[in-house]
Image (cartoon, rainbow, N blue to C red):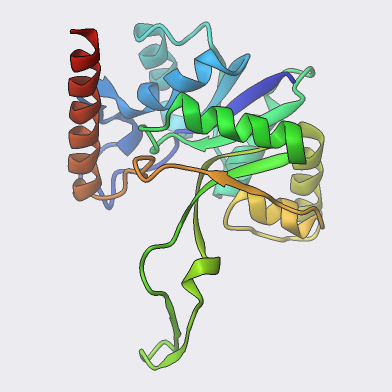
Length: 235
């Protein structure tokens, strides 16, 4: 199956307090967006990166500098919402795309193993979303804090990316959502809205999303641990 990735790199550094787009921040010396893209290059035919309109040219320059320009087929401007940004990225995909993997550029610790499981899930079920079981107790509450119920934790999962779909299903889902003014929180929600069953596959606790300075520290620590383990293997 011919697969491509759409990687979203149009975030901000507001909650990170960095003053720059968080996907441009270096993680162990390498920009987060480059670390996010690299594992896909071994498993997908190519990728489209979605950037903030004012950062498109800078993003192209950065990707060339890190040797990613051959794998990244295009850098396009994002839209007003995440949903619109994904659609912009999809519109730049080649016509031979059979499967599309949508990934947040801020999830810079994604591994080939996670991506491979998503691809296998698409082959088997038509889609696959990386996810991990919720470990905290989750309660539904009113705005004033009054608890309404305690949800059954064994049935709850936290969604991650990549989220992979047959290209035809994802294009149709975005088209229907646009026509009916439906705004989903992720691409899986759009495919659910289309009436298609959505399947989960095993994500990773390490596949965190950079949002706050604490996440940045965790990412540095995880990468340092990976590097140390690889060094031990090589001895």
